[in-house]
Length: 170
Ligand code: HEC
Image 1 (tube, protein in one colour):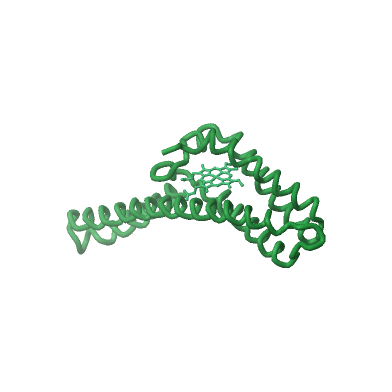
Image 2 (spheres, helix red, strand yellow):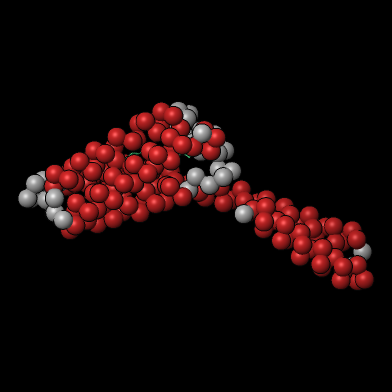
């Protein structure tokens, strides 16, 4: 995407340069080009910084909301409305993390480069975690405490395995 944007910018620039040669000397055009290209680089660095912050925040929410959801399940005494809200949040956070490992965001966070270089297991565990939260949502809708517990277990079974392979310790 970055590359396409850059090519478009360059195309626009060269069009402009054709018109500009008559009014502005080449050195001025060159300076404008340098400014535009360096802005593109800054924008992409900001995009990966944002996606790192987003996934870290969403994973923190996942950690605390999964614990909170587990505590809410209490057979017929379960507060289903609250569990439903919590499940919706977990599904949303799962969505955020699964879209926040954008290419080029391997520097600055704790994700190992294997996320992009050997993504099969990463993607499988991501799907498994999100399936777990979808099942939790369905269980909350059907007020099924047993299924809700199983769904949380299934989501939780992915955390350590993925961290061991794909998260750096420091
Ligand atoms: C598919 C892989 C994967 C799964 C599944 C996964 N994580 Fe992570 N998690 C990561 C990676 C990679 C990072 C490091 C992100 C970074 O720093 O860029 C991380 C970071 C975190 C962090 C630290 C966030 C911060 O503020 O730095 C927490 C907390 C966390 N995960 C909790 C969980 C919990 C709880 C689960 C299971 C319910 C889970 N994760 C499942 C890959 C995963």
